[in-house]
Image 1 (cartoon, rainbow, N blue to C red):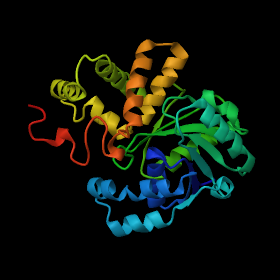
Image 2 (spheres, rainbow, N blue to C red):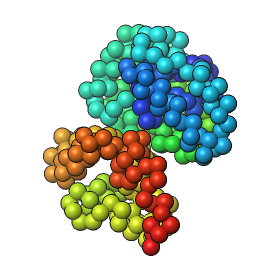
Image 3 (tube, one colour):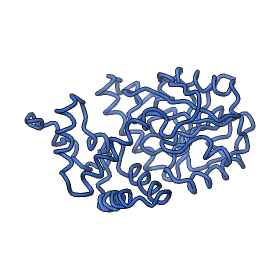
Length: 294
């Protein structure tokens, strides 16, 4: 089977990106989200970064956008899906409920993938009725620019299904990063999350302000972005959920402290770049000032 019909479950930050990138590369795309208007806004908002970073003309953007079916009808969204990619919040109970509903309406042919950034395939495969057709395809944020797809299955994932996922990733312009076995955080987040956690702990404990943490990291390492700049791009809801999951699993008081601080920002509408404010203010963040690193 060649994957042509793709359904994205959850048109949030990454779900909207996966949906648009797939449509741009010629896939037939449906995006399922109960909040249709918000989903359409997220998709439309991708015009500016695609124009800025990959010089995509507005006419081509509009043409691809027009092909995406945005719906709140799950059965309609997956009716002819070759591949479903789940991109909903990082909470087991939320994903389990979605998979339960999904299995009732999913065609037998459909491959199921999760874009989970923190959970492993073995944690979620129990919620699907086709374990041989289940795996994870994990995308980095801003996929038009950071175009990797980390692909990993379980011990029972059909090798043919794995190969089809790799071919799909290539077809939509991604570089497949194939993993021999699952590992917490895949590769990207196994490296990145400890850095972000360390930065968040420095902030939450009142050791230093976020902008100074970013300055230190960027000057000392030559990195183009500091950890709090990265957090704003990711959006603060995801790290909040990660910290809460960590606290619930381990009882780590630092995770609870960080989660509480992030929750204050989220409740104030300061969820990162998407909302116009996170640790920086957008569209003219403080780190763009000529003297930021001085």
